[in-house]
Length: 355
Image (cartoon, rainbow, N blue to C red; front, side):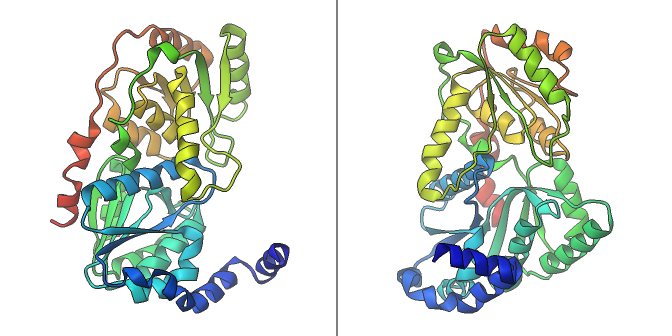
């Protein structure tokens, strides 16, 4: 049966599959009708893929909502479920219920499926307050990017109560210019809400860990292989890792997979990364880290929030001769800067959302 469903989806295409799911979504109402008369937040578009940065965003958002909106029930729907359950959600929603969209780095045309799902929610739920959590925006400066930005602008600006939260100043500036009818906020990536969760376990730190991209956002090219060879020639224990795992991860698996991943950071003496969440996971686990920029401004922009941490070092590139002395400096670091971003940036976020 699963193979037949997969064949049908491929035959009719993803967009037509989503349209059919949307038309049939009302039949699921009975599964959720107990929430009809409850005050609730719909946490929408959460991931089921193995990008653990996105999974951490979903976890941190859920934690933030449960700790700061205690009078609300929280219902989560995955991105791929939104078309399936759209009419059910419409029947469940009351005027004062809140819709929260997952944050991340996918507002734009680089990951167009995520952007189309976000547009779908904003367009189809015009009567409820919608908050798009901490995001990086990136539309390409070509014909396709301009076309998709125009569509996004029309849909976003047509909503009467949409709040967009940028996670760095570059995205905030673009949002401010393009979305004149939306409320804009600037706040750190929501995963930094977990900054007071982990204790430093310096005695357990044994390895140099690399956490380097292999996807379309990588800017390292051939430098990656050269860097790995140089590291392995000098250091005894070099562990190659990535924050993307090749498996389906639902909300029941999320915490287990996140714990497994964060343990890798907690047992590292130094992390070398070009991933935003490689840097963020290092920050919250108090792991010394050398990070370089990515394809867009999200790494540099997020670094601005944590630049006072003496154990996070931003470099222009990962040239081994340049970072070798930094590795030695971080391995021998005696005291690490305190981190408490929750008090500094997140405790008043709810007030700002409803101001």
